[in-house]
Structure formats: structure tokens, C-alpha cells
Length: 159
Image: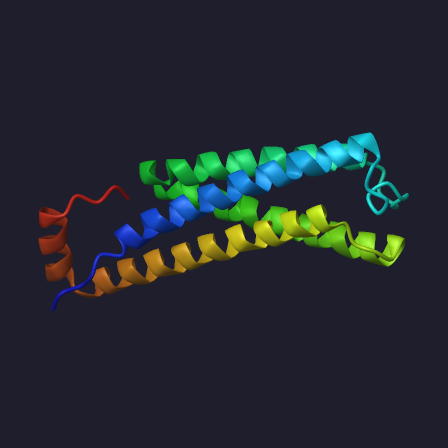
């Protein structure tokens, strides 16, 4: 019974997550710039959050950078995948909360903020797919100990 190694797909997903994270970082830099200059009418309305909107965009930039670094370091160990998944989940939840608050309070949406929130969700979905795929592959290998022994001798896994 031949089991196909999904690690080549995981490397591709890692590259996609890093790319989306960099694009999201660039969008958030633009968002912080328009919030700082006051050129976006929907971003500069008063929202019932005691934190400055530029600080929120900068926090999103830091989250994107940490997300990209953890995804890059996923080859070093599985713990980086858990942290990347946790940060992606928290970031997408905070982005959703901010979008709902902005829509309910300001009655309109900021499109760079909406795009950044969508990209946070895309990163979360990609990492969740990767986690489930890797987990199912490891469960299949553990069901057949003789196959996992043969495969571990012939293929050098990083995780």
C-alpha cells in the first residue's frame, strides 16, 4: 500500500501563506498611512474603542510579520504550526470584531480594512487545511506501523 507524502503540498501552502501575509502587511501599511493622514472618511469616524486606529493597523502589521516568520519556521518543528494557527485565528477574530464595530457604529466599511480582514481569514483557512491534512496523514501512517517504519527509513521528514 503506497501512501502519498503530502509534505510537498504543505511546502506550497507555506509559500502561499507567506505570500498572503506579505501582501496583507503591505495593505496594512497603506491602511495605517491613510489613517494617519486622515484621508479615509470611514476610518476617521469615532469608534467606541479606546485605541487609536493607527495603532490597530500597526498591530496587524506585527501580526502579519510574526505569521510569516512562524510559517517559514514550520520546517523546524510542528510547534511553529500551532503558534501560526493560533495567531491567525486571533487575528481573524479581532479583524472580524473591528469590521462589525465599524459597520454598526460608522454605518460604512473601509475597503482596505475589509481586504486585510479577508486576507487574515484566508491565512487562517490555509493553515487550518494544512493542519488537518498533516494530522490525517500522520494518523494514516500510525495505523500501519510497518509502513511508517519503511517510509521513515526511505524518506527524511522534517517534522
